[in-house]
Image (cartoon, rainbow, N blue to C red; front, side, top):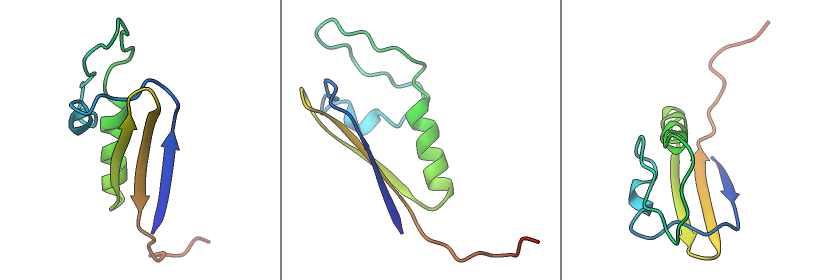
Amino acid sequence: GLQFTVSDTGPGVPEADLPHIFERFYQGKTQKGRVYVGSGIGLALAKRVVEAHGGKIWAESILGTGTALHFTIPKRKPTGTVS
């Protein structure tokens, strides 16, 4: 299959929040006055798309260093022809 990684050098995600970041509308706790902006559906939607294609998605994060999101998509043989 194919594996992709998207990473940043942001503040990171607290360990207690990691198991929940793919839940719909989850925004985590604020840390050091930081307010999260967004609706909390982006990662939930990404998870649904990846899983619909038979893949897996997960995150790794280190506070003060950043977060990496990894996902895999299995290779599939074409099922039809295009004319």
